[in-house]
Length: 538
Image 1: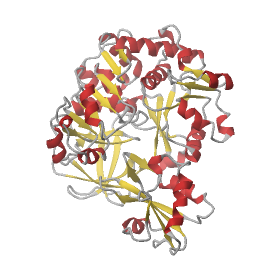
Image 2 (image 1 turned 135 degrees about the vertical axis):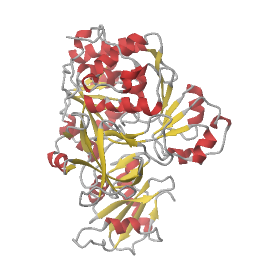
Image 3 (image 1 turned 120 degrees about the horizontal axis):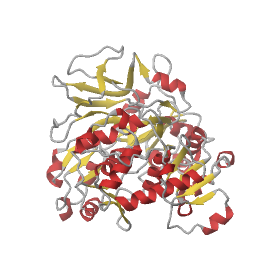
């Protein structure tokens, strides 16, 4: 079995990997050999060179094979940021498993839906997630045969004795043996990422190698990444920004990664200085949060040259002395609009990625003239550089493509030079704190409450340019507002914090469209009033 030990990539090749080379094992061996003595990753406490990290990954690959994980085995990875998470992720890739990157903050019915969709006998989890698993439907929990705990420093001896399913990651490491690295092809599905749905449950995006490894190549060009760069990442690794547009491209070029557990606005610049980072990752809402903080000496006394995944903000750049970089990407298709480093046009998302054809169309699918707004639609020039399907959702897979174009549901305009400008998203979707939120899942949990006959969740504009969540509950608007707080109490143990609505309001009847459907557009435009309860004003 080949292990690609002789494979070598130059920087120019990493920026434009041919489709047949978009697989993990040659990239892995290239990096750990070329950069053996260089520091790869640290969390401020533990430090791993490329050689040390590579050795540990390969020892775990052997252990995963002994446990029965083969090429194509679906394995949910459910944990917060840690070096052990990255080791487990890379080892699963090398073994050829299909990794489902799951939000560890999920709970209740939403969590159960994700696990039911995956239907795996294996899961790699944190100690905290183990507690959540033990609270779900027993029939779902009992399906698991092996739960691999990746908290290497946790005292789990009592839990190991009580639960025969549990495997501690430290006990899985075996001798380093390259024969357990699986052969892969660019068409093999090796990752599953979850994206929100506005009219149904979250969808599981099946991502082949050709798709997955297109993203780090784009990141390298957007940031002009080199082996001298250091990443500061506090974004969750179950998101594509933190993983395939963060840690992975740095590993590919021989750079360094400083991994933090979570974002803290008050500590962000202090952490950037401590890490000596040259590039940091943010979500679009974070610059406004950082600007709202009191100025400190750390604001410009750092080595950061760029922040990625944000729109241009002149005040932000002047205050923090940093370059803001953006692109347009969604889970199903990856990066389709970007600008190579140093070539940006202010206000624009960039130009069409060379691997794609893009168009802006009207409601009937006709291409509009430059300067006119319409929906962005896309189609790939090569096979396997976008999702293959939504897992167990054939109807959703078919409906994603219309007139031979993938429908993004995002609206843009394009100028005469070919630059694209964002004009809005499908208004049924809610974007909050960097997360795409599914109204359907909020409404499903709300309707389970005995006092809710019906409800509608919509986005309400937030000061940072994203959304807060507002829910209308069908009922007498004369009810006491203080009574409505029971709904937040109902949702809190059932949904992750990012999905808990801020605003609640009784409504006597929903406005309807001409086709007798609930008019969500009208509900989104209504101003807050004395009938609206703001759960933050408690």
